[in-house]
Image 1 (tube, rainbow, N blue to C red):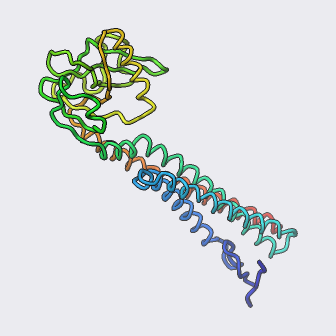
Image 2 (cartoon, one colour):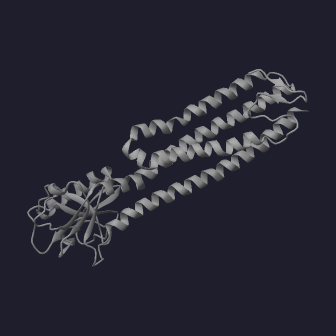
Image 3 (cartoon, one colour):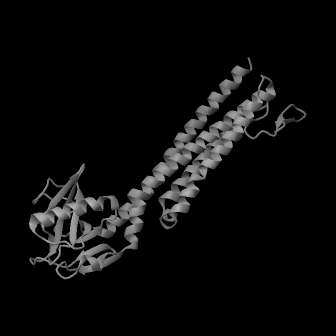
Length: 310
């Protein structure tokens, strides 16, 4: 892009470089404080919340669009640097413009990478669990002697009938790096035809027997279950149930896994609150780090410009 000068010798047509009368490049500083932060905030939000739950493919496509912006600014920086071959004022300003373009490209790239990582983590451990559980059904007064797991495949919250408790005598675990612990949920003293309801936890037992100490196992008011929704853990709990079947000579045709607790709704809301808290902390942290980077770049570019003048 050709550079024009006004009557006072000020350059025109450069986005990130001020005229000779200004020493601080206010426009470049402002844009580099706001744009990467807005990109990170948007990417983080797209992958954390409901849009990702309903449109996961489109959410990731939009999130990765930040790389396009990074590539564009990188190209503009390369173009300006390639045009500045000598030490004239005009080419010095082109080089400074190119440095800011390059800085913006790096800031966009990092904002997209960290926004994607943080968004996926927040969704996997907090908001995705919250959306799954709120979209599953709630079942009251479930009797493990009469209700079957196949009838409650869409259960998210289960409130068991009076007299339901954990049968710690039939606890079992399966070890695969972590210890995956299970114990049956039973109503009364009857032995159900199929043990389809299991309380679960990770690294909260020592092996077979009454060592199950997961969730609110010792809360006398706990008589509810919150459904396990992490697929990668379900296979290990299923193996623990198979071991229990062999050890205690019982049958579990359609085992369902729950976290044993008193108030499932409060636990669901805890996932939501944790997701919003993680998002807020991430947004504020990125703003501070990006602000520090822009200030450091401003100082560094100013020193480079002064050195080139001598």
